[in-house]
Image (cartoon, rainbow, N blue to C red; front, side):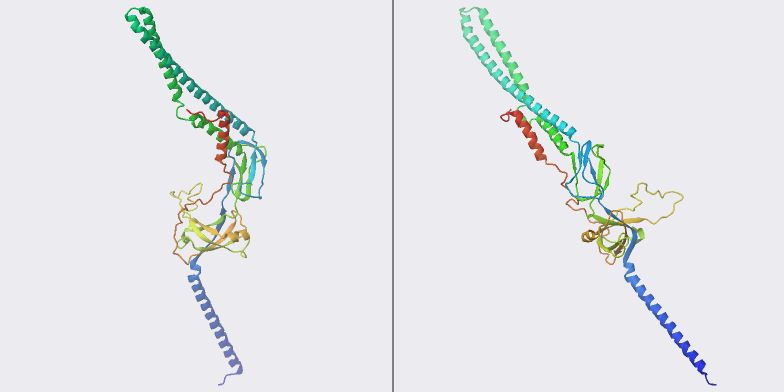
Length: 393
């Protein structure tokens, strides 16, 4: 029996269908093998989380002295530079306190000048008493031989002896008065006297407080929150506003505890911000891992020693540094959501962070005042009260 043309066409169609299925199967197998290879060589060598947020320094500007707010130099969202005057307090109270400290310092110097002058007066009195004693002793020595041959009456000799005793007593009193006067003054100049130094320290403190009415920006950045109003009375330590240096940002990526086994310090990371989307990619590196989970540092840590305990997978913050050039090109804001991916191919790095550097990580000289200027102002007050210079003890 011979095959009909219809049967022959059906057989050819069946063979084509089998070949197509086999080809698709082979493609699926190849794709599966490639994906398995990709997963084992790539996906398994990286950790990814979308539980990541931008962090940064939020510098709180506080008042250093009490006073009424007279002027505010910047508002929220505005850029400020280090050293810029942001808040000015009414200087009246500080100027009055400085005037009182100046007057007190001058009064102490004048009182000490009187005491030093009193020492010189006591020294002159001692010298005078010594001369009087010498004169009384001389009179007694001349009269005593004359009394032996009854040239002078004994009563006059007795008076001469009493004069010597009175001169000795007067000299002793003068010497003791001189010692008492020298006790708190001898060996030190007026400028170095403890009383002057204490009054000088009060003057310097008042001088510094008078110049702290101008509250300066310690860093450059953007004002993030202003909590002070014109006319408000603030105390020392009152928060006035917050400054955020947006060039000092990082990312805290909260990885699950099961994802930490291959994360090491120094590993590269790629990040995407929800604010820019996947078109903008940031590059960074792992700086370190937190020494505890997020719940351990929370305000109310979880108490797992209870009867209804349910295991919850914990997360550990991993800090990732950002490229400063990329930050300048595409600025971020504190608190923005990020997608963080850490490349864990190289696991030779340490699991713990590096020791703190010997030099300060952050430092500012903007609000600092020159104590040398304050010392010169105090010396000027002392010099005016001394007149021609220091009186030595």
